[in-house]
Length: 564
Image (tube, rainbow, N blue to C red; front, side, top):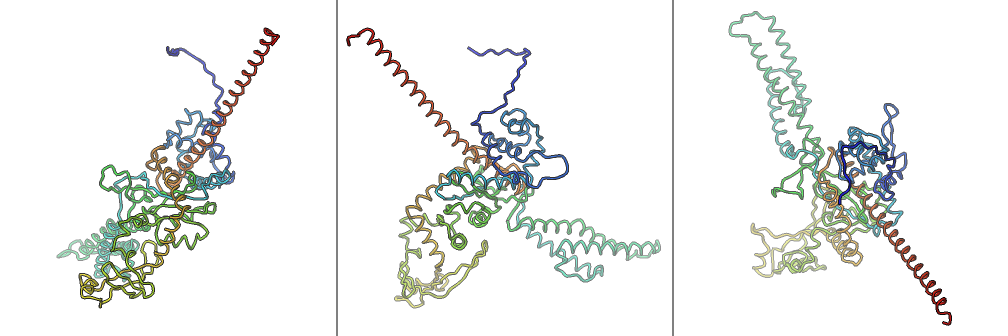
């Protein structure tokens, strides 16, 4: 049996009810956005021009569209015509995709999305959803909306820039020899501005020669020397205007765009080429992308940031400094990618009121039996604290020699080392031979007391019962959000270009995930309470039927058997 399906008939259908269920996700999104203060939502509104759509409405429709895996401005515009929850959020207004994309790319949207995480964290704190006062930090890489093959490498730019500087100096020397330009600092010649001045002076000399040539007789035996000079200067001017100046400007602009990075994409200057987990060709291909750092609690994202460098340990300090909700947490949890001497020292100095549960890179390996029984490791050598010397596995004695320092290029941290050198005179000739390297120099080992102290402290915290419990929660607290972002909600690549715009794009996705999870948990509780109420009602009806049945039975018993 099928339902009646007749086409071609004229029917007039009036549907005046556009309401959506009270437990719908759209209502949760609307309720949360409306809870943000009005002054934060509006920001600095323009006083002239056509009135813009309210930012609260624009944010609501973007959050709901992202929850349905719709990221295109044109498709969002289509949803406003066909999707009932979207129509309810937009109050049946037809919004152009131009308006949607302009709002999503605006500076105000970026600030609004970043501030919304502060109010969501306040909501979690009010409802007691902060997971044991701990914040879990991790990072992932996401591919940028940029061409994969429009890369610019810093080493190549520096190489050709230096080569061009040499050519500019040679051309400058040639112009000096021809008495075309006056003396100029060679440092200035190696810039686009200096080359432009050379071109101007050369052009002025050519104009001067042209005026002199016009006054010459038409026929000069052997040719005019001024014409030959002008011909050579025109070649140099053409080389300056068409080759040297444009290339010098291009290299200078590229160096400004690099900003300490090793690469960038021509179609998205803020994207950096880095290795991705999605390597379909299995050749270690570099793709333009961003490093997303996220902080979670109870699987809710409370803050996030984007960074151009692919390594996590360099993003740790700036990420903590920009976090506005860090004062609500007293525990910081991260994986071994953040464990370094610089980060440990930074936490000890600037965040002494907080506990941190961060293993270092060799933490798991140092716990293995193989490492603890390895005689080549300095940690397994015999150490005499009184006389301050080491004995290696062969019995070679290493005495303290001097202190040394090393400066880390990536962080600028100065690290202090104690250098131990093998004695020249050992107990036996064999030990004296083992005390030397292949080149005949005395062997040396380095020991970092500060790093060893920080490692031991981190190890003690992680191996405590509380540390094992807190750190074990990291895997199911922060790790799933990236899986949900890429696999469940289908955001494997950004949809906008430029760091600020991508930040807005990622922020909307994270906030949508927060509200979806919050709605699921609240809706599940409501459903559970509704199920309990239904069971209670069923139980009450059964009890009432049983009582009525007993009353009827007693009445019949008395009526038919009065003696009993």
